[in-house]
Image (cartoon, rainbow, N blue to C red; front, side, top):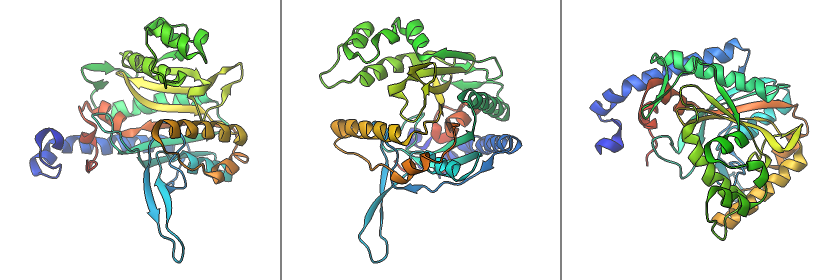
Length: 341
C-alpha cells in the first residue's frame, strides 16, 4: 500500500512496514547492478545535479533553482533531467567506460510509473557501437530479475522473462505490425501519417505530435513474455543520436520494453556540435511555441562534443526496473522517501 492509497504519509509505521520488503529489494537490485558494472570495468561517477540547462528536448520540463553567487546577481540554474551533458564532458576529458546512479528530476511527471524525482542509471562506452550497449541493457535486466527473486519481471498482470531471447524490432516494423502504417512512406508528411492512422490532426499538431499519438498505442504491446528492443527511430525523434550510416532517415536509437513498460533509452551518440546545436535550437523553438518557455543551451557541452570520442550510451529507469523485478504496483513502493506531491 502506498501513502496516496491510504491517505497517510509514507513514514506512518504500518505504511512503512508494507513498503519495506520492496525497499530492501531495491537495495538488493541496486547492489547487483553495481557489481555487474564493476565486473565490466566501469568507473562509477557522480555528475553534479545542478546544471546550466536541464536538457533541450521539447516535452521535457526541468526544475529551476536560484544560485546567489557572492557579490553578483542571482542566476537561474536547473536540476538535471539526466546526467548526460556532464557525463559526455567526462568522455571528452578521457574517461572511456563510466556509469552514474544519478538522482534526476523531471517536472510534471507523476503516476504509478512516474516520480518527479527518480534514479537513472546512465552509462557510456567510448568507441562502442550502439548494439553493444543493447547487450548491456539485456544483461542488466537479467541481473535485476535474478536479484528480484520472482523469476520474471511483472507489471499489471503481464510478465516478461528477461532470460528469454529478446525481440528486436524497428520502429517502422512496429508501426506496420501493430498499427498497419507504412511509416517510411509518411516521413515528414504530417497529414499522410495522420490519415494512415485514422487521426484528425489539430491545427497546431506537428509530425512528431502525430507520431507520439500513434506510438503510445504500440508501446503496451511490446515486451510481452520477453524483452523488446525497439530500434531505428526516425532521426527527428532522436535529438542526441547519430543517423544510421546506411540510411540517414533513421537514427541509432533504441528503447527497451518489458511488460509494455519503457525501461531504457539508448543511442549511438551524436558528436557533431553544429548538428547538435541545430537540433537543440529547433527543439527549443518548438518548446517556446507550445509551452511559452525555452531552456538555455549548454555551450560548454557543445564545446566538449568536439573532443568527445565516438561512444554509445543508455539511460535506464532504475526505479521502474526494480519495481518490475520485485512485482510491485506503484513506483513509490521502491523509493525510500517518495516525492512530496
